[in-house]
Length: 168
Picture 1 (tube, helix red, strand yellow):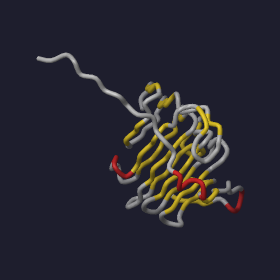
Picture 2 (cartoon, rainbow, N blue to C red):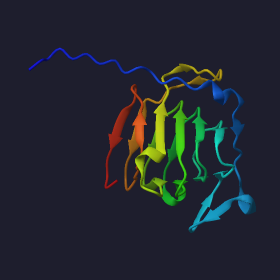
Picture 3 (cartoon, one colour):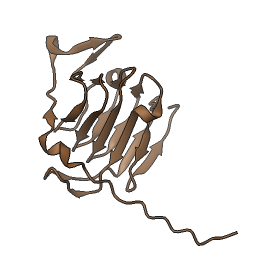
């Protein structure tokens, strides 16, 4: 028996590909996308590429495509119910999120990886500071799944506290 193990978890670094990322604009009203009884205000269906949502995400997101990379410098906060607070990663799609802020899901919300295949959805939490895109980020310090929240993904966020509660 040995008890001399040392492990170092390196901080996440934002890939430089996000310097030329496509900014995803919020869709409202008649421009919003409807799928499966949900209305989505952010939609990524252009296939592979690097995307960015500059403001803190509080509205539903729909993703369909392979090799989709999404940067959320201000994080994600879903509160309320699944009708107005959900992320939908379509079947045969994969999404990798880099977040510079906290991820907080409360109530009956969810991050729905439709295929229920964890390797198809990844979250990387950035540390506080200035990222490679030049944005000041507070860092992903909290990942909260509460209420009936659910997620099927893999997460690498060494500076993050994981909070789980409710029936999620």
